[in-house]
Length: 166
Image (cartoon, rainbow, N blue to C red; front, top):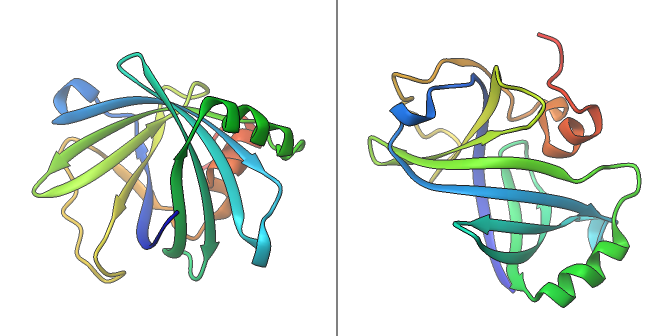
């Protein structure tokens, strides 16, 4: 299991014209939350489809602050994935999203789009430090930062099936 610390900020954005972005990857993701792990860690499995090739991952996260977390993630087999689905959180439906990874001024952004909205999306960026300056793409309209707003977590969005009212 690879253990790393992740510093990530999240932003609510207007759904941009994806064709105007420097998209490097388009990934279909089905993310299923599992019962909590040791030390209250958040656990999930993902089915990740990129260009028709499907792989599966297991992730455990311990949140330290709203932008900093310890993350342990590794690839698992289809059989392990199906077995872990038996530990699914019953009150949280799987998250279905399409992720677009794109570069802008030497920054790798991830734009998550959801089937319940063609107007809004979540844009994320992993940082070297929480104070790092972000150079936002000109053709993406940032509405607000949502890093510390749990209503915009993937689990909350899946439960609601919609973005919170603005």
